[in-house]
Image (cartoon, rainbow over the protein chains, first blue to last red):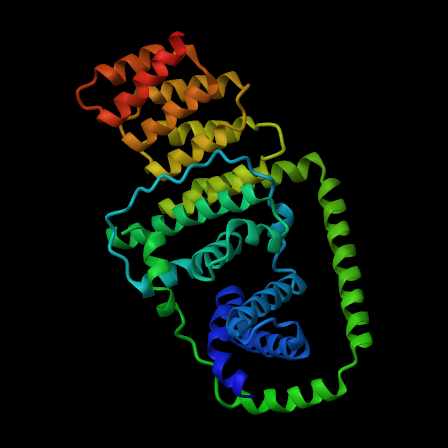
Length: 160
Length: 208
């Protein structure tokens, strides 16, 4: 239970960012802990416990969305050629965490999940592609689009 | 500071949710139950059935979509157009453009959609929408109307980021008809040096 108490909030935040529902995120965290405890022998070093648990909860959260058929957009994600460049247009904006969080939450799942995994959970584009079963180029493009949408939202807030 | 850098540097500030204490007891009880009475075979079976069900669902969905008739396709097109027309903010417009691009990724171009995109290019739209539209239009490099409109946009555009995007597009299309517009950009005192430089490089390439 010590491990649970130490990591529950961290895992809850990770799961909530993906699932966006408090009750479902709590259940998913519990599922992840059970899964982790059942597979604890596979953990190579105690030092890796935090990141290992994080990976498990991310897997469980995505599995949850798959089961709830909330990852339908994966079937609609075509293999996009890498033509979309990342032109940074709003480098001069001063950001606030609360506003950025709100803006991330308004994004469609297909952009939000990739943004969260890449920018907050430190997944590489390749890892996200493997996790979601997409081409790496598609993930890169969705990421660039998500970032553009995010900036657009934050910029429109400044104008209003 | 860039948005990317800001999020990465303030990552910990995004962790502000706390698990309610009262569910710890629930978990303790569940943990005891699961670890002492877990039945891997049963779990495996459940996972297997869920996977089969999910696969059937996916196949059924794909089959259903595949068999959509022309009428349904037009309906999708009209809904996308409606979303684009009704978009009130730049963000909504950008989402609508991306949705259209995704929908037409492996389909032939649609005249109505193309015209809506051309309109965005000609209007005083925001730079991000125009850049997204240019990306979407580049999916149809063999369409003469697309090529002509991109060249025309290059002649009219004054926003540097969009100008750069158009110059790169014309380079991809190797459009010699863009030569006068490139010359105009180079001679325009209002053009940014970066834009002029890109235009000159492209002009040299096209004249080779």
